Image (cartoon, rainbow, N blue to C red; front, side, top):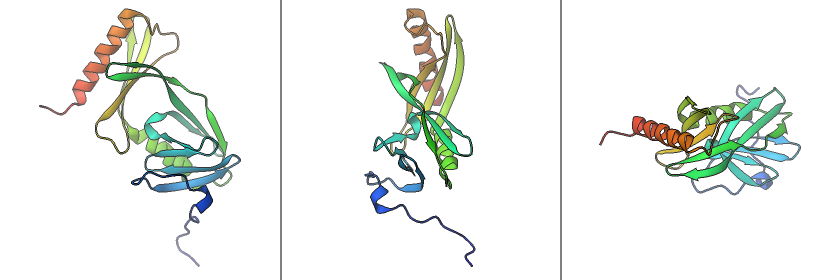
Length: 173
């Protein structure tokens, strides 16, 4: 009798095109194919592309379904990106193994800095995230629903908040 049971290795036909320094952490079958979690992100079966841990806004696990809400770029600004929620991808996992825990852990660990701020017309979350394989943080904001994202005073306030956040985590000169 085995004391420790290991999951079988990822089938060769399900192996995504990994970067040279990328390694498989865990995987799980779903109706669409195979979800593969690596140190860089999660490979989605239908798209055949990797979603980096820093590119995921939310993850929910119901015990059967893994729901991933990716971030989509709404606008590039000087020093940061404005993000919005992308379409939620839902995967039914009959034998999830470690996949849901790895996804949640990796997404959470990618967040190095986060604060929420009230603005004159709405609110904004400022986030600094670690990107696997890169130095420094990737900065982004996500406005709350109903915020006036194009209003000049809101844009200036957001610029100031991001600048203050970047300065607060920058190493001393």
